[in-house]
Image 1 (tube, helix red, strand yellow):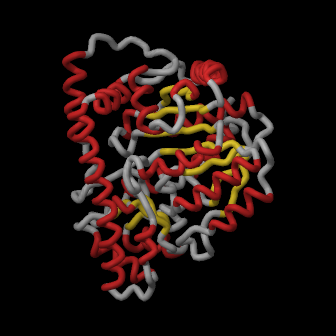
Image 2 (cartoon, rainbow, N blue to C red):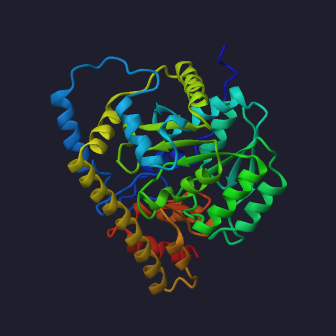
Length: 394
């Protein structure tokens, strides 16, 4: 019955990681996979996580199922961190999900059930899996322009023109709260204000993907876009992730949240979110959520986490500067200072697909064909070889 099956095309990013693993070169560099790496090229377990886990091992009394909506204290702490005092808690319907990907999928299923005629507008480019998720949920997608012609900065007017002229009332607009994946190009505060006004005026529904809180400018600063939307939009959806800012990639810790106009509607939305969860994975895993709840709920561990998060953010920012300086000093013949304006782990370098292919085939440097790199994959040990190779392919 399965003889008709054909191999699915490899994932653009995970496929590169598989090719990287198979590459025998001792000098290979992986700038494709989206995980934080320290100066030694390792993805560490945070000290605050280790301490919380030891505490959980000593005090945990059960491994029974969580409720469909997840660990209550985790959801409460997440709500405080993500939303602060920007919206009343009783207006927020929130469920714990398996990572930010699970949060986007639960949001997609919710939208497909209750706004089936909506089109989801995503930036061009966006995280590649966004379109896959909405398609799997049965939702059509369209794109709004995002980058300028050089693919190194924002074309904000084109973004506004597309949403103003093409999106219909009732459509959904997916926005990256900060550290845009894959470009690293974010909106300025004044641009968030103008975009929020357009969304409210046009009757569009924001869906905010919040996967990198704290990796841009800081925990509070990175929530500015979301808070700006909440000031003028009575309703929106947020999918958040703790994979990056807690280093809990394999624990799959996230949420999906629907903000409504009042408590009654929020209760109805929660029941529908739980229905979507029940028919998908039934209930979420406990461990990662318990770790996050323990850290956010303990003043000492919370402070330690913030310090470690600051360290990760500062390493990424410092690496950006070092990369720009090394390319300049090496005689790249092209100004890469635009990388300094980008935020988070990812950056669009302006490299062409052919140049990215040469980096892989000739130098065993793995970069997504769009020119996106994971800045955190650059280390003191590979910086010189990386910049010399980029200069050669230029």
